[in-house]
Length: 172
Length: 182
Image (cartoon, rainbow over all chains, first blue to last red; front, side):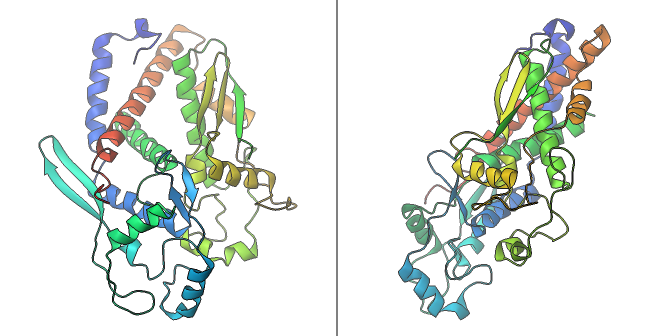
């Protein structure tokens, strides 16, 4: 990146600043922060918003079919408290969104975080044993136009803003 | 759906990088001000309706009645970005292809919320008052040598911090962050 007023700031000052910024930036991704990021995906989804896998734009999750709404009404007592029969928010029993996990690994250059879906699943909405796992459900929902597993562009904007603010505070 | 945006006039003497840094400050200001419950003219945002306050969305978003902040999922406010940056002006708003957040923003700005305008329910966050803009640009003064040097430092810090934040975000959130075996 070049700056048109470079003549007022010499190269050594800029290099020193870049080094300080890099050190500050590396400290911003912590276990707690990544858990927060995972929770944001859950919250966004429960509010009925997903992510367009092609553009990264916020989407409204595709509405439920009439038939499925009926199934949910008939099994209202087993519906999660964070949904309603007609609400499309990938929450029936709540198991799918509860299955998101943060995994932390040491790698050559430092640490790597991954958000994954724990495939283990309990009973279905109608009380029957599930024959599919949470990953299967996520894949199915993605094909149905209800993709939730990712960050939207606004969420990435927020992450960049937060990291930038942390860096700028560190520099003060 | 109309794109929601606004343009501010700034000094013609600012270069592109300085306008970018100012634009980022304006966005930060708007988000903070809105989450503090004030509209673009620093007036208090109208309270939530009873029906919304009693809704499941309200509860899921972890909101409280007295705290009007236009933040449920955070998508709308965080969709704000610098759309254009040219000599003497900066345009800020929501990208044209972001239908969902443009719709939400329009609902708030016009008080329509998907229906007819509701009297007294406009929550226009899309902009900045003259005095707030002046306060921001006063931190980027360029009227003498010392101020120009300070501004250059500040711009450099802001843009390098943004670049580092984007790099870190790409590193951590790139390949493998979301288990792609799905």
